[in-house]
Amino acid sequence: MLLALTTASRRRDTGETPAAEKPLTVGYVATMGALHDGHATLIRRAREQNDVVVLSIFVNPLQFGPNEDYDRYPRTLEADAALATEAGVDVIFAPTVEEMYPGGDPKITVVSGKLGTLFEGKTRPGHFDGVLTVVNKFFNILKPLVGEGTLNAYFGQKDAQQLALIQRMVKDFNHQVTIKPVPVVRADDGLALSSRNQYLSAEEREAALVLSRTLATLREKYITGSLSAEDVAQARTTIDSTDGVRLDYLEVVDTDTFEAPQSEQARVLALVAAYVGSTRLIDNMEIN
Picture 1: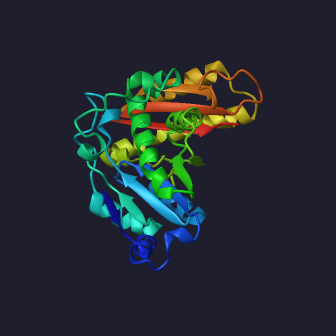
Picture 2: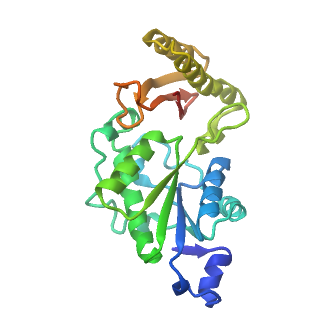
Picture 3: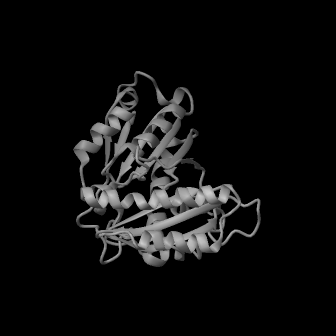
């Protein structure tokens, strides 16, 4: 189940530097593979802050709905290993479905609660239950290996709702894990990096830029104090009227509750999800 790649794991294997000398800090990055520069940013951040970096690659069937892209989701382990090694990973953990879920789907899963039914959870029922269940399992697998050391887990803010749910799970379940959020990584033209971007044709990729550009417009209006409900409605129309793009949702929310902001002190996030061609993309931007 564990594929040791680089120097830190070799040191442990050979006894060159006994692990018992001092508690290690371990940086963990959870992925489904199809790695890109956004993942590399997570890995590099973990590399800067930890003694050992562990990357998991697992396309988790529990977080896919019956009509989603589980079967065609890119599986590129060799290329992923090359990118991960270059970025500074010490250990790749690439379990099979049978290893993670022996005997089939688990009988007990993590329930994501009210937050897990909003936005992404509304469009993809059960998605976040699957995400939290597999992340919970990975934490339970890794923590004993860390021993008296520190486990830091790095998650991208592009999946803002997922990040919020994982932070809540860590708190509610008393996981001895520190969550380290990492900002959204974008291409030079502003498109948020995503493994699903590779599904896009050149024309679809150009159309997808309406998502980040619309979020940036909302941020500018919020900063100048002029953002109104009419502006948000116009933003929805802008996205939905773009050729090849179909809006799922666009909302402005409090980053803690994912509900409408109730105070001027709240941190505010603009969330968007849309289909570009047949590919569903999400993005978000802190606007204050």
